[in-house]
Image (cartoon, rainbow, N blue to C red):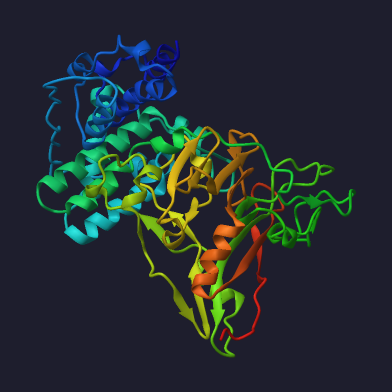
Length: 483
């Protein structure tokens, strides 16, 4: 029943046309996702033996590297021989009299994540070829072929003004037109030798709306220990002024090491007071652990450390090396880091313990998981551990199958719209076995410290600008010189 329900939802969403009748590559890819999800959720794959991969492939009218990888994913569960997908569809060059329409220019950043436009500009600047103009012309052609109207009323509903609340995590037929046109031009640029293979794969894979490994993981409820503010003045419910926040429990209490597992990192929105009339969070925080040793008297400031380790290093994979590029978590053996094992900042040697994930998908279906850049364990700590994914998180385990590191996130419901630049009710955190961490630190001759960044916000009304105040400080950092 699950596969039929999801397939029905996808078919209904795209106007009642099955995969066979689609005119857009990205829509075909989305149509394949319910089948993959069905196998993920099935305890016995034999229950889905009626699904025939050859029949599915024969019904696909359009192809892309994303579709190929999804069919490859399905082939892990459905045996098939001699399957052959269609050739990539080429684009028609725009005529010399063509000019980009006003709708595309104004609304492409509304219906797609702005990074698509940024990447189009980047390709154009590096290749000296009119990627943007060809993208717009191809989008016009696909829209006409698929019977999709570029409607300003629809755009105003989804985007509205730049000051109003905005719709998050959505996609429309117009979105898929623009996304498919982008993918089609990207393919042609690669096949013409204008961009490299990995460059092409990275941007093409991003058109899938979900990372499949994270699709399996459900968010949790808010942990009891998560930072929550206390309402000081119950009569003052305005959001006009930035006011100091008093916490129910001090954030510093989160780093106590009196338990078997200690908090290594936590990040997300700060829960509003239970007495507050404001249901949405206003403030957010990042608490990131790092290992360090001191070599002299020049101690870096909290701002210096924040610049170097709060949002870096990053974990990346080379797209062409990955057989399953939509499974970022399972690609642990292919991880690369954007920084070396340690960095020196003045007279402090810093070993980052946390790294930021840069997976290959733009998370439209779980956009809340990209609101803060996902955190993971840095490579020096995770190299001898094995990943295990469960229904509400993932863990790194030792050779005995014991959880050494555990990751989870929480979500306190979602609304259709949120105010721009304000946090959403989501957070993420990583805990680590204290004995494992302390043994690693003893071998390195380092101690653990934390950097805490709290962002306070205030907004007078929906048309006002969000004013921010950042408070950055170091916790558990001693100036004692390491011998």
